[in-house]
Amino acid sequence: MAVKVLVEKCIGCGVCVSVCPFEAIEMVDDKAVITDKCTACGACVEECPVGAIEKEEEKKQGVNIEEYEGVWVFAEQRDGNLMNVSIELLGEGRKIADELGTHLSAILLGKNVKKLADKLIKYGADNVLYADSPLLEKYTTEGYTKVICDLIKTRKPEIILIGATNIGRDLGPRISARTHTGLTADCTRLDVDLENRRLMQTRPAFGGNLMATIICPNYRPQMSTVRPGVMEKAKYDENRNGNIEIIVPELSEEDIRAKVIESVKEKKAQVKLEEAPIIVSGGRGLGNPEGFKLIEELAEKLGGVVGASRATVDAGWIEQSHQVGQTGKTVRPGLYVACGISGAIQHLAGMQDSKIIVAINKDKDAPIFEVADYGIVGDVYEIIPELIKGLDNIDEIMETV
Image 1 (cartoon, helix red, strand yellow):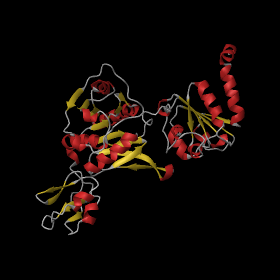
Image 2: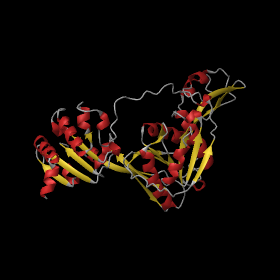
Image 3: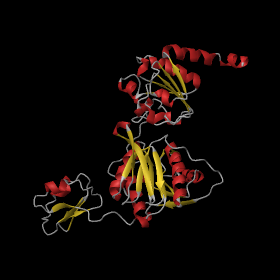
């Protein structure tokens, strides 16, 4: 849908300007003019006293997809540090670009972060489009959206991959709406239909009870946000060379309505589940929140971190930052120990790609044993203390082997 002004009816009253939530209407020569900020929300249509604004069906069906080429990865950085999901997407983007026989570009926005552009090349990008501006030093929805959409309009990429982080989940929908294309959110797998050059975007659907594969056949770019921790990181190659293009974006203070006045970092350490090589998770089978003290002790002995099922988070036993699963974090550690977790499909979706899975549960028929490499049937309160005791005496045990 699109919104248009019937110039012959417009009386220049300015009501539409005042009611537009996106400041997308201007008065020019006493007539209302719709700008490219318009989202076709319809607020102005309802409020116009003379019916001079109306919605119309988009006449254009799709785009000329042959004009679009290349795979782009949004290289998210915060305070000059490249996010891990960006490296994961470069690895996946490299595979897709090679299959399609096209180039891989990283989109980097910020201020004085050129060192990251060099890093992106080493991680597999052929090109880095680096937009440098003081207005991009801190993330703002409008600033980042405008710069990236301007690049899309002129460069026409075929595919764009964005991490499903807090920033990515905010930025992705804005870009897709502005460029009139589709977006598949929270993807856990990406494939390519080589015959039609279509990106096959797979994500959990219906509460994780099935996996849906989504395509965008008629519009470009094809856009996906991808969960952190799902894809393997790209390999770093110190000898790799590529092209870095520094762009001075057409961006002004007026383009950014919401300003970042101050950033206050949370004092409490965040749980980096996606990066942990070892995770020990507790589920409802622990029986009470005190059970997590035992989980923490085992995790400490193993040099890992604590994870949790959604049921324990919902019960208030542990904070949401520890949650693993479809509505939590997707992880793929070297070792995942599931303690008192039954193995609901929503939880399995977040950890089943772990290299080694150890399950401890009283129920021998629990679904978690179907994905576990090693299973122990028994009470976690009996088994975990024995494991901890064994780890305390590991040196003595190894001497006897």
